[in-house]
Length: 438
Ligand code: ACO
Image 1: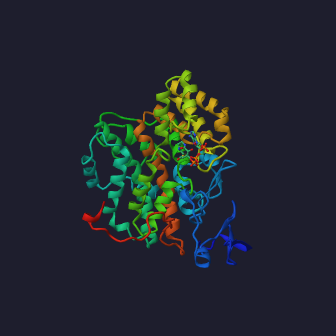
Image 2: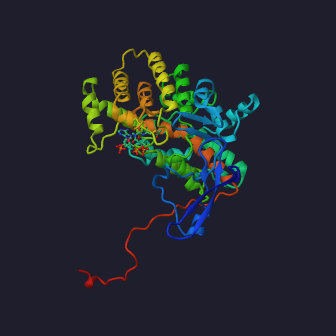
Image 3: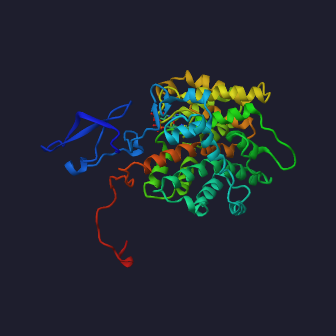
């Protein structure tokens, strides 16, 4: 650890049964949250590893960026509660906070916003990458490819040991992801790519590139721009989740930030992570009407069915997901702005939520709606095809990924990530020539 986690005289002692060998391990304390046994010397002292598939009980780093108390439903970025940030802040301000540790003052905010927005254009040659994809390619496949290709275009910011290079790479990633995402969408629907406009806000510019065409003027609704900004804030960072851990692991080898973020995008794609909001809409379409909810719930509870209630449950939140409430409110605002009075999907989602929240199965397992339960409905109402939902998540999470990557690179005690294993395969044996095999 970087030495920022304090230790005191308290220790944890592990005794190997049947021997008189013990290991005394330091207990580390963050600023809040549970204490952590430092097991780094365990192997040297007792010759044993720890086993923790899924890393549910393992801290892989120390970090000052995001704090989650899953039981209390608390999410803090650099100490600030997510609901306050979603209510009062902007996505770029939150990006500054995550990257640099503090909310910017007016001059810093201006410099940061300008710094990011000046990088929104893509190298013109990156355009040709899109033509290599089938029109029906999933936009996350396009995102993995084009973001990965960024390392072949921005050679002047690849030195991870140079703070200025790190800063420019962060600006480039935050600025260009909306352009890459919007172009993935335009390519799929066969419309011309729309170039970014730096006089617009971050979310506003994204909606502009998604929806405008060269044929006519397009004005982004301020309410929808604000809703999009809030969705981006709610997805900006979530400490050491699967995709962030992927970015850190890739980055721990010294790989360049564009390659690391491409790895994060790949990890985010799965339905258990970033693909969940897409899966929620597919699930709602499959259920069809409120009358079918009981049958669906019965299927979810049947362990042989492999069906899950998508948008419910979370590895860390076991009480409520603080982002879900804000998302629900935003959902109503967006539907109102768009003049959607009765949305059958929203009605179905709300009924499903009501029934699940009172069902013993979900109550006993502490399963509550997560951030994705409502975000899919908002995005669908705003005109995003379901295949773009995870892409949007990737745009937002790029800020968290690059902040976590930067923190890791700047940690002097950082070393390559390398988990161990319990080997359960065959023990050593001799090669058998083919004719002698039975
Ligand atoms: N529907 C039905 N049952 C569930 C669900 C669900 N959505 N989630 C968990 N359970 C059940 C499990 O079957 C298990 O039951 P058991 O104890 O009887 O075996 C119990 O609850 C614990 O589940 P785990 O799988 O151990 O929980 P874990 O923390 O590993 O999983 C996860 C978390 C992957 C998010 C899970 O809840 C899930 O698959 N949810 C649906 C997908 C989803 O919405 N993902 C988005 C997460 S948020 C994000 O990435 C932004």
